[in-house]
Amino acid sequence: MADLSPSLLAALGVPGGTDVLGLPELPRACLLVIDGLGWELLRAHPEQAPFLASLPGRPLTAGFPATTVTSLGSLATGTPPGAHGLLGYQIAVNGRLLNCLRWRDEEDPRTVQPEPTVYERAAADGVHVAYVASGQYVASGLSRATVRGAQYAPADALGQLVAQAEHHLRERSYVTVYHPDLDSTGHLYGAGSAAWLHQLRFVDTLAERIAEILPPGTGLYVTADHGMTNPATKVDVDAVPALRDGVALLGGEPRARHVYTAPGAAEDVLAAWQSLLGDQAWVYRRDEAVAAGWFGEVSADLLPRIGDVLAVPFGDLAIIAAKAEPLESSLVGMHGSMVPAEQLVPLLSVTA
Image 1 (cartoon, rainbow, N blue to C red):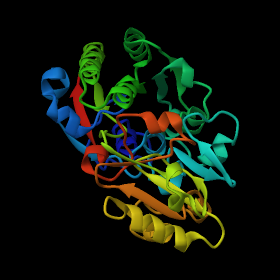
Image 2 (spheres, rainbow, N blue to C red):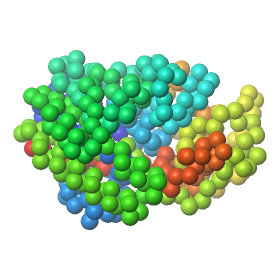
Image 3 (cartoon, one colour):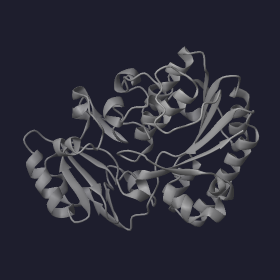
Image 4 (cartoon, helix red, strand yellow):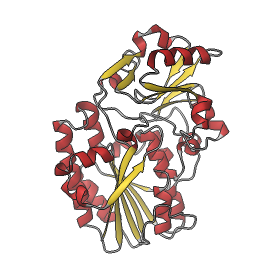
């Protein structure tokens, strides 16, 4: 995921871009980000996405955790999570739990995400840069952390997304179009459900319509931020005292938990979580996860944002907290883990 934006910059001729993915040189690039469209899900349902299924492409790895906040940070900066600092859905920042999707004014976005964005780099080289997405996100902390340097173009319906993309694809331009509805449908009804399949058909139409309005010399690239699974088993941390003992803050999400422990309690928490969950989840200390490269190279000042203990289900399991997180705990479709169904996302392309 972190290789895509630097490759797009190189294709546009922006200094410092590195074409790791071998993209062709073109004056215009349109990146369509379909939230929640996993590679395995797309390949399993080609009949519901005939246009997308017809495009040449390959899978990319989202990075850890496989969640919107982290992947949008990697796309925005061209760096892995350990550099941009958006290390999960909920992370500890200055001793408090920050929900990075609902984030407004609790923390300064430039401090939380300190890296320059690819949009700033492109704009400094004279590229027209636009970010097309729902108007409800324009003032969010996540947008202010990740969309710096782009002109935010609000669009709250499929037709508006296409029209804004068409408007902003100019002589030399970099336009990102972000669409969240497949993800939200999967969360509520499950990936692969009837509702999800109908939504996939709409997404396919969106991609096809954008492809039809591309001016000559434009590359359209379709990707996603993560895949999705429907875990059948849920372990409720709030109902198991042994999983709450010694835990100061519970971060992350049900498929990728950051567990921040009380002083001196880390080893006891690690032992308890390994004993209760170790047959269905990777349960590691922070230093073990960092040494294994889960987040890429991590800046020293960002280490405290990672849980003292990390619990990442590889089995059919969600680690919920029904009392503390009633909404998140009720979801059907989930993501965040390092299994292929959640990690692999498409990179599809078409050139006008």
